Structures are given as structure tokens and as C-alpha cells.
Image (cartoon, rainbow, N blue to C red; front, side, top):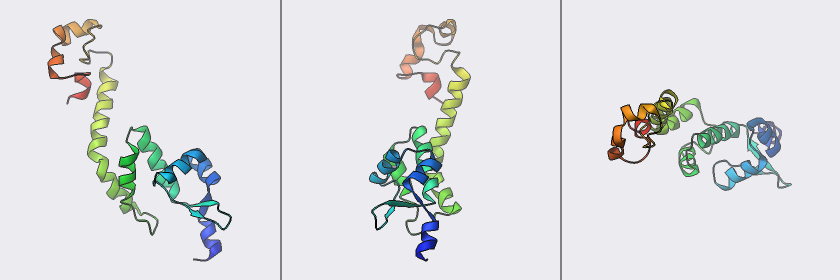
Length: 151
């Protein structure tokens, strides 16, 4: 690939920040953490391949879901370094978290649907708690909001 063709397929840190919505400092942090990579120009400026946009979107969305950076790094490590990841590559890594994400979705649905009811947290402050969890019976199942975290 010619020098000009490569540059046309790359973005600066400012362009990546603007397009991804991530601050330049966050992008540098992701790079230090091994989540994304760049090449340096002769003037020591970072240049990112355009496919880094998808990686940054994946990282930011995963973080919003509460997935630790170590787990994000591990999954991103399954993507090829020598080429732009394909749809099949992304599908393969999405399988790594499918079970965990499905469990999170179920928990969020229970939270959405049951927050106005007794959730088994032990507070016994709602009039429904006396009927649903008399004497805090659900405490025998363990700590926390048992109705939200148990299937």
C-alpha cells in the first residue's frame, strides 16, 4: 500500500476522538492499556487505522455495561492484529460474552419490572414486603435483593 493510500485510511487522535466521542486522553489511556494501537509518524504523531473506531465503540459500550478492562482486553486480543477484523471476527468474540450479557439483560428486566414491588432486600419498607417477604424470609437465601439477583 502506498504512503498516501495508508494515510487516507488512517485518522488522527483528534479525528478519532471527534468521531468516537471519546476524549483524546481516554484514547491514549486505551492505548497504554493495550486496547487499541497506533503507529507514529515521523513527527511522532499518532495515527490510528479507521477500524479503531469500532474497537473504541466496543470498549466504551462494554465499559458502560460494567465489564472490566481486563476482560475487554482479553476479548479484543482475539481479534487479528495484521488486518481489519471481519464480521465473522466480531461475531466470534461476541460469543465470549453472550451468556454473561443474557444474564445481565434478565437482571435489568427484573429491576425494571419489579422495582415498585418487594425485591427481597430486607428493608421491609414497602407494604408489599410484609406479604412477599414476611419476617425477611429471603435473607436465608443470602445477601442483597434476592428477587432481582436470583432466577
